[in-house]
Length: 228
Image 1 (cartoon, helix red, strand yellow):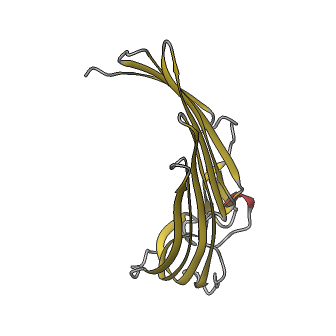
Image 2 (cartoon, one colour):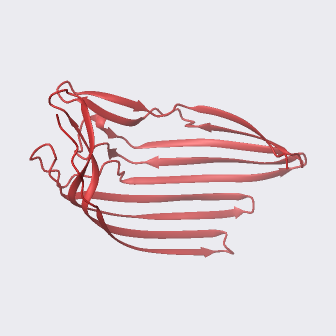
Image 3 (cartoon, rainbow, N blue to C red):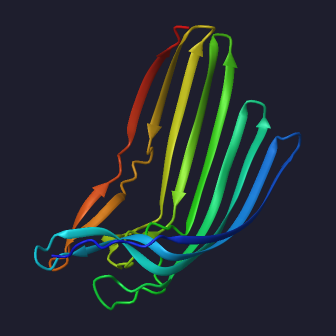
């Protein structure tokens, strides 16, 4: 039976440069930054199958070295006093520069880090409104996650890599007049997108997998009362 081994401390050197600024009496804010990082003794999860029991073993191990580089651009705009639009876009590239698989002589040099998407993005729109009978807000938020691998071995099986996915929600709230109560509601995953949240192999011989899916579309309603 395989047993977990002690891991060494991880060392990270990171270099980053960026810019932040605002215009039009702070109605528009922009920021951009880029980074480059190098790692020694990367602490990472390793998934393998025990040859005796065929059960999955997940343990912490060291990759000798690796690097990552990327950047992010973000903005926030207020075209109207009660309307806010914000978002960001990020890019990321990762690579093990030296990594021998703990269970054998297989070299994982050049593989990507696990759960490191190449692109990410999100955008939000929020509007606060005022009426003769009360005040409220409505808004929506959308998030994009690009392709990534679940395992550092970068298995090519479709079950062990996540395709790019968009997720969105809408929300609204309303408080009548100067009352102490407020109603709110939200719909998450409004497109009903069904995607994998986690996948683990539990038998290398039969190539069977354990799947965990994301939450489906959900409708949530709530009421709030302020007593003080």
